[in-house]
Every structure is written in C-alpha cells, then in structure tokens.
Image (cartoon, rainbow, N blue to C red; front, side, top):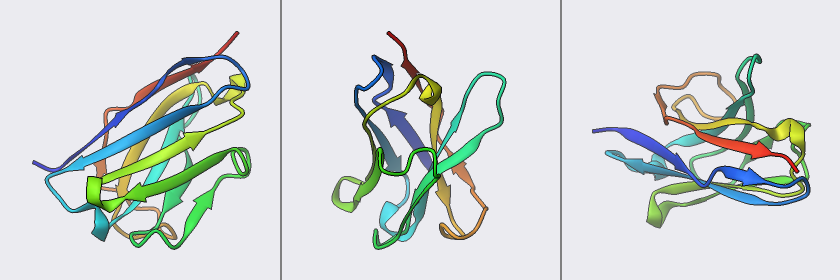
Amino acid sequence: QVQLVESGGGLVQPGGSLRLSCAASGFALTYYAIGWFRQAPGKERERISCISNGGGSTYYKDSVKGRFTISRDNAKNTVYLQMNSLKPEDTAVYYCARAYSGCTGSRTDVWGQGTPVTVSS
C-alpha cells in the first residue's frame, strides 16, 4: 500500500510556528522528490515547496520563502515542512505529494489526505 500521511496542522496565532510531517509508507521516500501544496478555501491548490530526492535541492514559492523550510529524514521515511512567522493568509489545507518527475517537473502520483492549518488570533 503506497500512501502519504500528513500531520502537524492545527490552530496557531499569527507569528507562530508549526512543523508539518509527511510520512510515507509502502515505498522508499529516498527515491522521490516530495512537494508540499496548499489549498485555501475558494482558491486553487498551489505548490509552496519541494525537496529533491537526495535533499540537495529545495524550492519555495516566493510567498513563503524565508519563512518555511522543507527537509527530509530518509531514515524515518518522512519529509517535514517547518513553518515560521505564520500569517493569516497561510491558512489552508496542506498536502504533500510524491513528485515522481522531480521538483522541476509538475507530475505527482501519490497524495496525502491533507492537514488543515489555521492562522488566526
């Protein structure tokens, strides 16, 4: 069974931090690039970050650059998204996905169920 499961979302105040986790099962995460996506209510899903299979290359959407950090721990078969200095506009459901064509591609084939993040005072 190939799947990804996100966790770590919740309610946080503006300026706060959360760390999201994306745990893989049924396949070795080390072979795949993983992207983080989010979808706010009434908005289209957008890719906000990606990490290459080896972890040597990372990518960030401009709106989160400098605030979010993507990382991976292949021993734990998990990718993380550390989110700092959170803003209300970061409120969304966050998803991770397997990017089998790499971070420079646009193809994904496995998605998690999503974890909601709400940034509000």
